Length: 223
Ligand code: DC
Image (cartoon, rainbow, N blue to C red; front, top):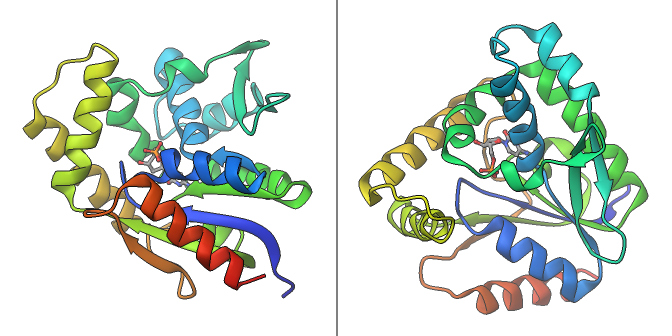
């Protein structure tokens, strides 16, 4: 299969995929798509409309109401519902609690993967998620898998919540991260796992710039 110029970054909750992916995309002048926000948007609608997570018809209908739009003069995409962006509502703890369950649904996954592939087909893109290197763009030229301990990840997520004015204990944040890891890695459909040809990076003792440098060196080598 011909390789595409995409960069994939997969990894568990709060492993730094979004921060690093966004910065990498800016440096190499690619688009950036965080696929987690797509699963979060479906969860947002399911909660708002009180859709039972087992009601696949209603979940599929709700995906049809969402629009994934590139923001002009940026590297990023936003999600619109009824012509209004909902991106800013997608990182709250209520969505965090339910999103992994919604993401186990195979119909939801295949619909979102279809949209992700369409975007990857027409753009040079850094795409981040759980199954991008394994399922969504298996022929991507550069694949990375980010790792960090659950303690490091909990501390990062705890600080993010605090910045948003949300006060949760570090223990609670850590146990929810571990719970989501379990669901993401053990689900039947596209479980979280490194692609066989991905480069695994443990960022416990690395800062953002060091991780990006390592990625840029690999991308350069692969040219
Ligand atoms: O990266 P995130 O925390 O925003 O992802 C939210 C959830 O969506 C995560 O628990 C698993 C799911 N997800 C997925 O299954 N596949 C993806 N490509 C991206 C996210």
